[in-house]
Amino acid sequence: MLDQMSKGDKAASAGALALLISLFLPWFGINTGSAVVDNMLEAYGALSVNAFKAFGIVDIALVLIAVAVVAVLVLIATGKLDDSLRQPLESVGGVATVIVAWNLFDSGKLDAVSIKYGGYLAFLGALAISVGGFLNRKDGVV
Image (cartoon, rainbow, N blue to C red; front, side, top):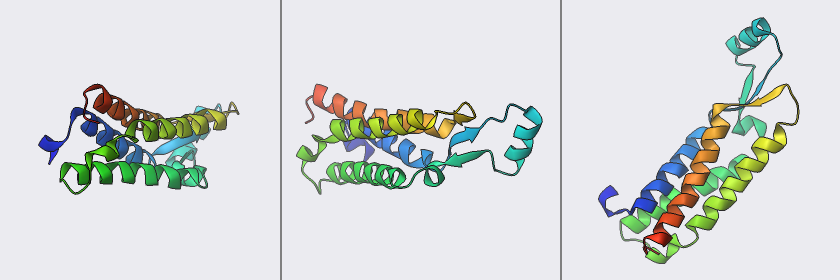
């Protein structure tokens, strides 16, 4: 099946999977300013939150985007859907990128809140979906 996917499809699928995985990883953390307190809080898992704990509906929207992108691309690769469904890929990736960026940098208003690696992975994954759509358009796949 992977050999039937375009370069853009592979990039978008990898980005969607990275976005989905990132939702379970730490997005935000608390910096108390004390290494002792930070280490103690980290030991109890109280120092960071993932997307499901940090957001209300944003996490659900990102899950739907990631699952839809992978599902559509797999169905196109297996010949069960029309190739024209690749067209909104670039836009969907752009929307996901804006959603992630807005929530990452809007939520970081306090000095005590920091962005963790899950948030950065989500941003890169959403961006990869959009890049995959761009590659498909550039290569004439869509």
